[in-house]
Image (cartoon, rainbow, N blue to C red):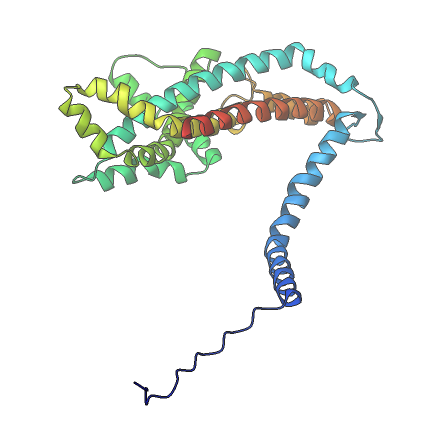
Length: 308
């Protein structure tokens, strides 16, 4: 049987782009990517790479605040054995340990409190987070008034409770405890959001399975929540450790480094602007940077391992 329909004519296939055209498209995309990244690359080079290179160069030169500089080799690094620097290192480590522990516990408790969407939870999250939007210097000045003014609300409450007048900044122990309390008030809401995000990413079916198996709330927290929250906790600790090791504003404003409350950054400031020796200050900065790099690399590896 012969078909009376005309034969179907297939549409011609579009020719593949020539290799030269594909190469020009790839080059155009590379140029576009470079154009997008160029402004940020310039900012990083001007505000990070150049100052970092200058700091490294200053660390191997005798570089007075006023006057000519000349090569000094590793002579500036004898600042690392200075008794004032060693005391600053010890106090910084103590402050970092106490602050990280207290801040992590408070933030984790707040995150557990507001992780579920219930009535009033949104208001509670906002109230807990609000201190985080206040600048650290402004917060420190606010608490300086609370600590040192006899008529402040804090001192009035203490006197009402019959505890007598407390010299919040009069000794190293009191200054440390007062500063840790201020930092906890300032940053707990920020770390609460980080930990709350990690808590909300845990599958609720895991909690239901644990309850079916007869686990109590403490066992669920210890065997389900904390192991799955480990990467988020590690990230929070990276931020907390870095911020605590670089503490400056709070102690500079509250105590000025008195009562053995000088941190490593205050010691750098003292070398640079009081002793007027930028070379020794740069040497201490290089050593601090090296310690921070080692700590952050170790913690980031922990995060990746836990993530896998």
